Image (cartoon, rainbow, N blue to C red; front, side):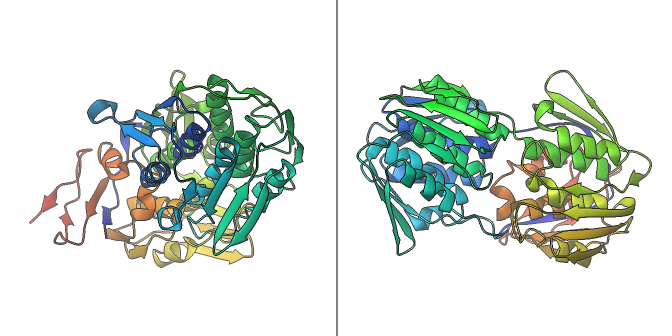
Length: 442
């Protein structure tokens, strides 16, 4: 099992590039189920969740190809044959996005058997909103032995009102609606850029969609979709993570290949914390750390509010800010699992229900810590980058689910970080005096 060995103390300086958004790529891959023709996706990140979905589609009978070398971010998917419309538990148990194939399978094949979703243990991710919407569209759905089994001759357009905002629910029912008979009106929809990304692909495939990116989406069903080529948006959460990395390490970092318009809430909080933030052209943001970071409160909300996927990373930053920061988690009820590990490194954090109180700045010291989920892993990397000494992060496979070669990217801007597998001897790392990648020493 791989680990990260990180020695803190180096400011991050230079330019770091963001990969494609895995939370856009996953529903876009599922959308390929809706057509017999080939769908080509570009800017696909090389992360574990993408490989899991590739295996899932292949197990259903799809042909999934991915180029090597410089074009490895390009994927072609052909679902001409869906010989086995089953999302097996052994494939999807580590990924909540399994629910995203439910809607397109029913819409295209009229039948689906999908394992209940897995993923990070950060709280309930109820699928009842998916089921409620699909049943209103005419699907017959039962649950047994950990699987959802659904059937429908052809889905019918319906008026769907989400009881609460749900990203995957919006995406799943949007994909179901594009092949439904008649018109579907969806209200209280998620407005995240990932939803807009999916809608843009579906439109390129021939779907008739209005209002994506707003709370109300209207879909006029069509009888069939065709193939398309589409480029996935940059990953806004990876971009936000790197921006915080620049600020927390007292660095000067330019985050390239991103969309600044998707980062508004994060950029505003960085400014409030004292960082200098400026756009560089249309697809890059530069962050320059202040002499002293200032405390600032955050409260996670649905887009365009502060993203729950950036809460853990911001908490790491708050440990280095002067004053008291209140961190309120309003999306998931169990998303403070990184707190215990940050406290072990010297952070001063108290949790009361859905609110964490962070007092800083705290001098962090290196420790052996455990990664519990994807974004918690990122927060521990950030903390280790400023901790005194050499930290060891275990279970970094969580990180690999959503960040592409993060250790190589961080090395390129001066971080002392090394991946270490169980088959390798311990790595001792010298303290670098410049921004060169870390080098093992005897």
